[in-house]
Image (cartoon, rainbow, N blue to C red; front, side, top):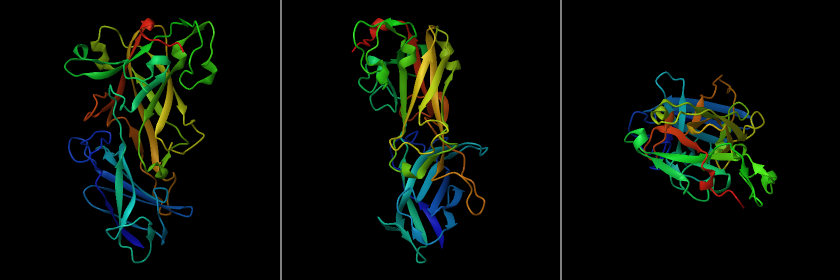
Length: 334
């Protein structure tokens, strides 16, 4: 059974960047689809504009776990594919359908795309959050996020203020810090750098059709960004550790799109930035019967991933961090 493949409107939600699907330097320009029949995978991809073509067996392809479309930006050299949206089949022969059963009468299918939302902002809608310790949590309040203006020229960036590693005395029970129950009732002093917990979220309703490539490997990268050197304090080295999904133990994309990590820093104060890269494949890894391998898709905070994210309509994907020893500014007690 041969099919012509169409893709629906990606909508106007910010899919890495609100306008990327239709305008700008990084317009959505490439698609890949995968169909799963039993244990057999069938793949094809094509560059926009145009439609894709594929031959698959008769069968039930209801849901993103059976048939999924990836849509995004392929760079000029064809070495990077940034995922903007994920879709499942919504129409057969241009007619809306809830049950997707494809037979010999099927000549075309249409995938409805849902954007992957991403945006570092100074509001609670930010897809980047600090979860602990204490009142550093941007899931509770955005009050610890300030916006830097002058030192970075005319552009403002959301800035996440965090404590340095200097120990803080505890004079009472401490609330669960960053989801770590072992820290519920510490005594003595707490080295807060060991307990800075962050989360990056990429929401999408079609993650059943997305698998993590390489057994769950993904990275949050800290850098010495040149743009930060314009500030009087020097950029500092930090250590970022990915916490979930466990590396090399699962290929399942978390259904809520959450990726957790922890940050450690010495007693040096200053700035750094972090950005996330999540290699993914449609449905599952491996070649199909014709020898087609999945493309090297990556979920990123922005198509210019290591550039600071300015918020809505920004190509950047990195979050700006500032480490301070002014721990009195933040109440970490329970």
